[in-house]
Length: 324
Ligand code: RAM
Image 1 (cartoon, rainbow, N blue to C red):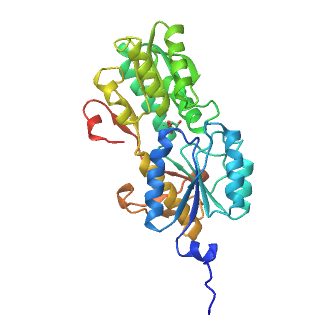
Image 2 (image 1 turned 60 degrees about the horizontal axis):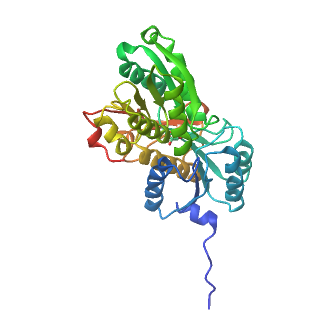
Image 3 (image 1 turned 60 degrees about the vertical axis):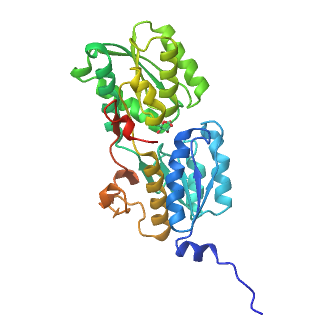
């Protein structure tokens, strides 16, 4: 009787069946659950397996053992949103040296510690969006504004904040004064305390800009509960479903985000194409993903970056049309 032989990992990978490690900033934040729906959908199309691992808090040092563990398991690829770009780099480089493809998404690991980084949106675009929304919400585009961010080490947050600061130097925004940047660590409790602190410390605050789905929701709840929705506005990056009530009651009349499930879908597809050899992550390579980008090609840019697409702007005219 012939012994049944389990297919080798290489044979499975060649058939497009992969085992992919999905490592978000933390496993509590709903943002990463939403992205995972896209990862899972893409994986299901090829019968691949997704293993989600990650810390309970968005801390870079807590991500390292998960990377090491996925490397030991010899997964085909790791899809990671980094809590700190340099902290996770050595472990990711070791994974790459072991033949594992690394796809950064959402928040980038250091250049050289991934094969491709899937950016949700052009960084500078977000810097302009955040400045524009603050300008729109502050009376005559003047007054104190403050930023409520996620973790102080988060690559995506810091890039957006830097580009917002650059944008705010333009003449159009000269009436806006950025008085503070505080960090809620993508933790609801910490974000709530930080938002309350801003209201106490800056009695003339006009806008809280929170480029984090956790922070914007906490800030809107705090402003509403303080009875300040008429004088302090909240904007940034949030889920339409979380923010609908605050659009309607005037606490947060405008904010934005991208399709988070699509970000996960694209990240998985990039991982699969790296494993199959269709792409290597070199600048100038292009590829298509059916159903995304109007079926037009994506081109890998400088530092191995692929951009999903522009952010949506949500306000009372369209927020009800979105369901995520
Ligand atoms: C939070 C996280 C994530 C960011 C979104 C907008 O969920 O900080 O990294 O992309 O907000």
